[in-house]
Amino acid sequence: MKKLTLLITLILPLALFAPEAPAVTVVELSPINPYKPLAEAVSVVESLKNAFAVNVEEQAYGMYQIRQCKLDDFNAAHGTNYVLTDLFDVSLSEGIFYWHCGQYSPYDFETIARAWNGSGEMTKVYWNKVERELIK
Image (cartoon, rainbow, N blue to C red; front, top):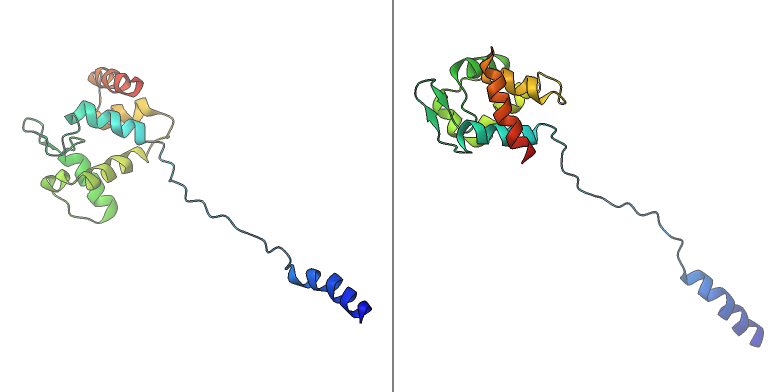
């Protein structure tokens, strides 16, 4: 009986320990958006982040001051039919800006910003304003 008790006392603890199961840790990561700092800077320069801004002279709408030509390019590329007043929707305007950015290297903010603004020498002045916002 003593042998049986000894045997049970030695074997039972081994049976009570289950082998370790492999564990998986799930970490939620935020997507990387290399254009985010540029988008912030451009929205400040264009409209002081005013989603309802309108430049009557240029017919530019929304936080990013999107003009009809940029909207036409976006609509053609995506098969959509947005109109200028739809650009008061921040998500839509931001999406159009990011789409524009995606056509350039994510490491060339100057080219992206200047192309967003138009063409010619005045885009250098525009870039200087955006760059100042990026540095802040």
